[in-house]
Length: 300
Image 1 (tube, helix red, strand yellow):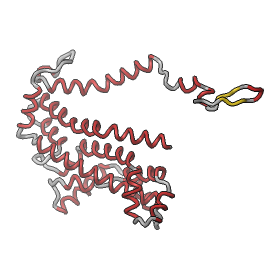
Image 2: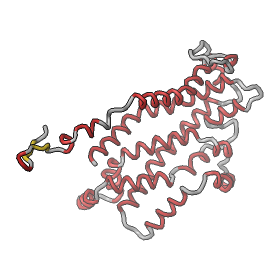
Image 3: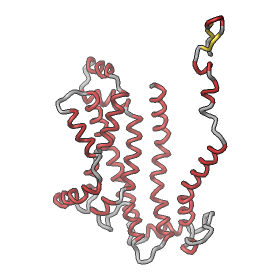
Image 4: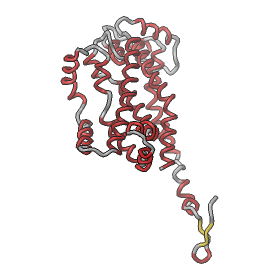
């Protein structure tokens, strides 16, 4: 409830700035019809290609070039998915399993090591801290394509070519993840809280596990979601280091695209199945991530 205070000349003024200027805050939420129209058009343009891909995945190849395109699903969706998993050139089931294992391992590792390093760079004191942080930031400026050849030579030297660890180990931690967690830890974790934990006899790793990691949960959720999506959609490095008979899901779809006869319904069915895990991850963890971010914003 807004408190009224007596101003100069006996004039009563609102105790809150929002009460003194109610129109200023209401204007933030009043969007014009043109704004809504623009958002609807942008939404349709963004979703329609995915919707059309799913529609074609339930039909036959005869509708791929139809104008106007079909807008309703057909009755061949189950048959196309069955042919997808039975295709001897795609290894689609193996590709799904490899992508799931690699994405889960890289995500868990990146969140753990990035949050641990971010805590160290933000709250601990040690020699060379600034130089090491600048080195990590510098790795973000190097294009991934420049490292493929030397990284491939290392994988051959280790005997990891055509093995799943070649897709996992080089990406167990990223410079972007360390920098992101360092910035968040610097703001979200008070120094007084760390000092209090030290007084209570907590070790450095105990402080990270019991104090810092819970405070970093919103940023860790966002980093984990982005890392899972990036690893799941990675194509260039698995193409270089894995063979067609031991693919990730993206290579399985590529095997379908490189076939002598391009079966578009099979390719679109594979792509539709490949995006399902991403949707499930976002649906399961998206609300928690957004809720954590909003909780942090309210506290700030």
